[in-house]
Image (cartoon, rainbow over all chains, first blue to last red; front, side, top):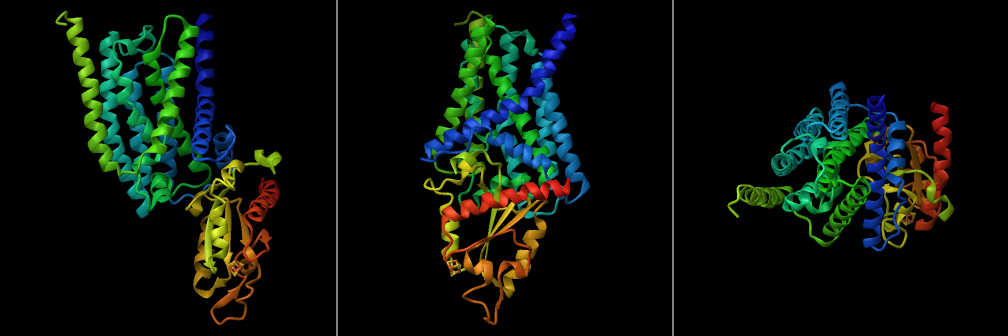
Length: 289
Length: 143
Ligand code: SF4
């Protein structure tokens, strides 16, 4: 009986994920607007956009393009479900990574210069973030003794304080912030892999992106687990709010750079941060320090 | 207008078919903090495949006509077209020129005509809002 109840809660949470991510993006848009001296949309705007897109007719270039969109969504959704159900974090990250690759394939499946440019930039982005995220998850597994999300329960950030910091560039990119773009063709490049999608198919691929964001936030939140569930939820909400405010601030305070600069800076920085943290933890655990 | 802030989420595509740039500057003014069209959920998209509303400025020249048609065809249904300013609405004052076809409706169907030379940003926002009423009808017809 308890199992059925747990399953219902897990699926309900899973179904709520797109709504939560939509609200988060809405808050992000309001914050950005306020920083720019504008009023901005309502917090529900991303959800309205999504509803509108799903209600529109798609003009597909070819069938494989749309198939890749649905496959990306399926992979990302499974990755999120795995995290919520307390499954293997490493598997979740890898499935989500596969989803990101499928999205790139979708962009490459049409003969459009902006779409393929976007796909290549997406690949650079994956190259800049995935190794860091992998190391973050590996260090999480080391500190916890298990990769199971449910095997958590302690405040991991106390032993791995640098790992969430190393994830910030990944958040900047996944939240599609502008420091990593060239100013001259900004909107075309940001739209990159989405260029040739329209109507419902665009909605589906955006939804896949929302679930991908959920995986990223899910991994971050694992660092903020507390034995007391109420305090845990409060701490997690604070962590999410910090990330949203920080990324909006960085977005509005920095000049735009290219993704290659990002690759050269974020990848070594992330690896060094997590690596140093992991080494220290190892030395402490073995009584050297 | 604040009451209609809840409207929907029209994404705009702007195309200049041969304007004097007067109307274009007013369209771009919509993005500034003063008019901030994102309040109404509107976003400027540089891509016809993502757009719901096509904002056209200027009289249609013979050269731009084909491109206008192509952009219109690339937009997914349901879609709306707004002729911004006197030139886009009727072709005036360039009507009769050897290289000018006339208003936007000579090439593609237009949903809303916005008068003015140049069209004021407030009227442009109102034009999109009026067009959205038509959107609902179009959606019902399609359904
Ligand atoms: S209506 Fe006036 S301002 Fe607008 S394009 Fe024509 S001439 Fe220029």
